[in-house]
Length: 276
Image (cartoon, rainbow, N blue to C red; front, side, top):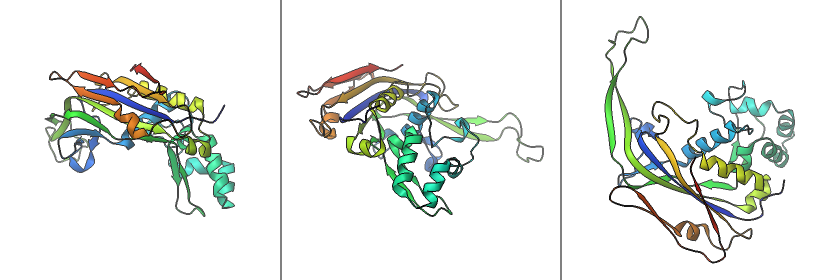
C-alpha cells in the first residue's frame, strides 16, 4: 500500500425528510440551526457516521460508540491499554512510536487523528489526521416540526407519574444539506494514510446513511444525493481547497430541487457519484 501522494477535495450533498439529522443537546435536542435559520450538522456528527460505515466494512476503529462497539472494552483507555506495544511505548514515554503504532492499528486515527490523554498515563499523545470535514449546512432555512409524545406505561412500579407523561420529538420537514472536506498529503505522510484508505473514506461518504436508522432518523429519511471527488496531481494541489469548494455551486429552486453548477478548473478533473 502506497502513501497518498496527491491532495484530495470532496463535497457531499444529502437530503433530510421528516428526520432529526443532528439534535442540539443545549436546545432540547431540536435539530441544529444557525442564527439565520439554516440547518446544521456538526463535523463531529459526520465523522461519527463515517466511522460507523468504516466499522461496518470491517475496518479497525478506535473511537467506537457504545451501541456499535465490536469489542468488550468499556472505554478508549481500555482499548488502547489492550495493545501491549502501545502500553510499552506509553511507559517508555516514546510519543513518536506510540503515534506510529496507533496509526497503523486504527483507520480512524490514521484518517482523523486522535488525542491520547488518559488519567494516570505518563504521556499525552496528539495525532493530527489528514482528513478534515466541514459542518454540513442546509441550502435554505429549515422548517422544524415538534410533536408531543406520551409513554404507554410507567418505567417502574414506584414511578409516581402517570402513563401519559408528555415528551417532545422534533424533526426537519425537508432540507437539502451540503458539506465539504479535504485530505492533506503532508499529514497523510505522517500518519501513513494510503490511497486505499482514501478509497475507503470515499465509499463511506457514498453510503453515509446506510445502517444509520434510529427513532430520530427512520430508514430512508436521510439520503446522499451526490458525492464530488477531486483528485489533484500533486501533494499541494493545483488549487486551494477554498477555490475547489467554491467551484461547486449548489442551489435550490422554488420546489427545493437541487441545482448544481460546476466551474471547470483547468487540469483538475472531478468524479461524481450518486449516493447508494
